[in-house]
Amino acid sequence: MSPSRRRTRGGYRPPRKRSEVVTAVAAVIGVLVVTAVLIWFLRPNESSPSQPNISTPVSVPEATLPADSTPASAPPASQP
Image 1 (cartoon, rainbow, N blue to C red):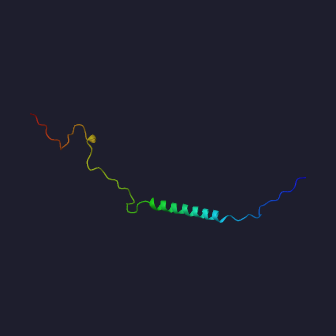
Image 2 (cartoon, helix red, strand yellow):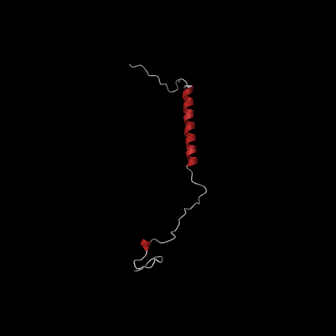
């Protein structure tokens, strides 16, 4: 017959070292501070409008003009 094993479910555990508790608390506070700082600096700019600024071009590029049209600002060709 084998000896019975004791279960240590509710058994005594020695308390943790104070330095381990202080290190764990400092790590948690550090993570919270870094998270708050990142959220603060990476937040959207409040002064910008809620909709993006979509601008239309002032002039039409030459590539989109029809082939038979000539630009109005072209100087007349001089022949010597």
